[in-house]
Image 1 (cartoon, rainbow, N blue to C red):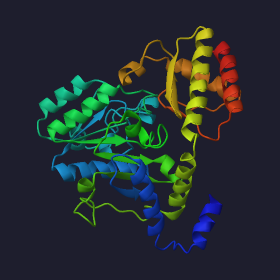
Image 2: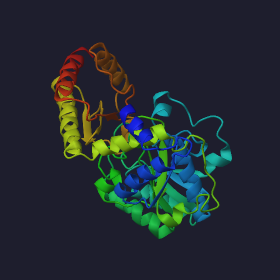
Image 3: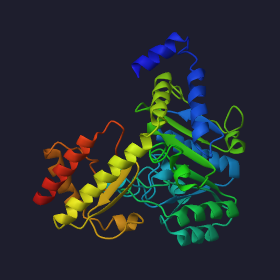
Image 4: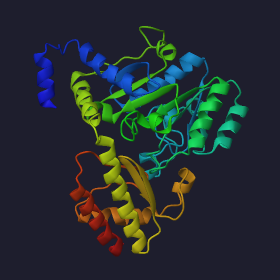
Length: 355
């Protein structure tokens, strides 16, 4: 990355005006993400999500937002209602400090349950600005959507005059070259991104249809800015990361090693007599200590979190550091080797015997 940054400097790119790097990364994002016609960079996934929330309200002139129980979209006030990940792990209630009026404008539905969404729209006719969700949940553990669910959300929001936003901060460029919306072939109006598009550096972005994005200043009246938005180090790291991911065989390799990893862990767990289920989509995976399919947060809550804690410690003792919560998805990368996968499965077999 440093070599790439040095090369960019030698081309004459000014750090005082990093527009060239922003524009270059923006072109790649627009080219690869189906719904994105315009994109705005910021410094984190939280910033991206709070900005897209404001944008949905500005565009529709409605105030209410619908999210799903267990989905996490950063720590903006509106999203800390029935949130996932760290909030779930620490057993926190809906976050103190969030005004009641803000919480009241955030409606929550059940993931993979279209009926729950329909009922909320019926009870709030003409008041919902948009729906935001993780197209693959990573903050209640790894939970896949059904195709029917995503397609149903697309139709409901279209019929109700509301916007649909995929929060692809986790899934973006991780589960598919064209993000989760490309994997499932469902086109949202807006999307948020982060993580991968900065190659590990602080970054966030939101984008979507041109007519919606033109609401953002200076093109429109909705203000959003940040001193470090589109900083050159994050932009060049993102460009290099996306270039590597575009190389032939990248996603096929991640799918191969991740499928072998999760299958190996689940098989080892069952052989040792544990109730366990798991799945993956390319470089994103997860497992729960329970039987049956996990379709939403309510299902995930039935998993054995105490057993997960023992398993996590046993894996640490064997040199494998997993995400430290039952409610966090795991990720593989192109840097992981077949030997890494073999070693992790071998450690899991030992760990299952002692927990």
